[in-house]
Amino acid sequence: MALTCSAVVGGLVVVGATGAVGATGAGGSGRGIWRSAGLAPHPAKKKKKVPNRKPAPQTAPLPLRTGVDEGEYYLTPTHPVVGAGTVEFDPVNVGMDEHNMTITDSSGHVLGSVDIAPGQTQQLDVKLAPGTYTLFCNLYNHAALGMIHTLTVR
Image (cartoon, rainbow, N blue to C red; front, side, top):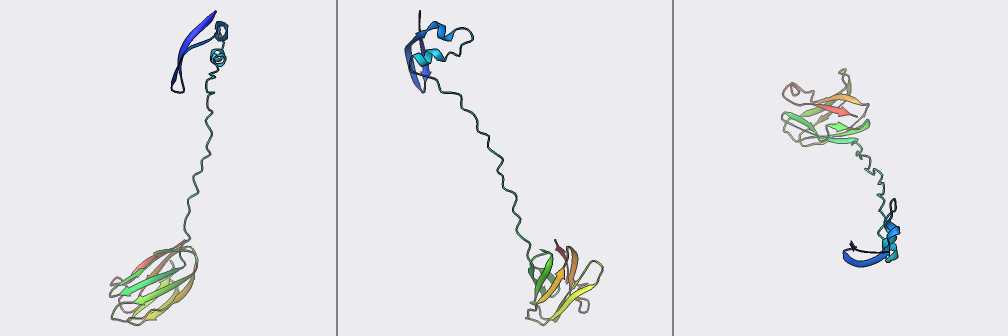
C-alpha cells in the first residue's frame, strides 16, 4: 500500500512523495518515507557549547609618577592613586608665593620634602608601601589654607 503525502522541505512544497506505509509504523521515526522519496530531513543540529570567553578584566598598572600642581592655596596631584614602590613626584609651583611639597605617612613621619620657587618644578622620589599618605605645603599656614591632599598607594 502506498502513501501519498505533501510537506514543505527547505521552503519547497513536495507533493506526491510515496513510500511504504510500514516505514512510518508505530514507533518508527517517520524518516523512511522521506528517504524513499530521496528527501531525507535535516538531522537535528546540535547546539555547540560555547565556553565563557569573557576576558579577565585588564587593570592598567598604577602610575609610579605624578605631577603635583601647587598655587595659592591648593595642592593637587595629577594621580591621587599611585602604585607601590619608588614614586616620582614632580611638583610645580604655578603661584606667586614660595611653596613646598612635603609627604608624610599615616603616623605623621616626614618621608620627603622639597621647596619650590614660583614658576619652578622640582622632583622628589620616595619609596612608598601600600597605604595612605598626606601631601601638603609646610610653609606658614598654607596647609590650613587648603594646600593639603590625601594620596593613596596600592
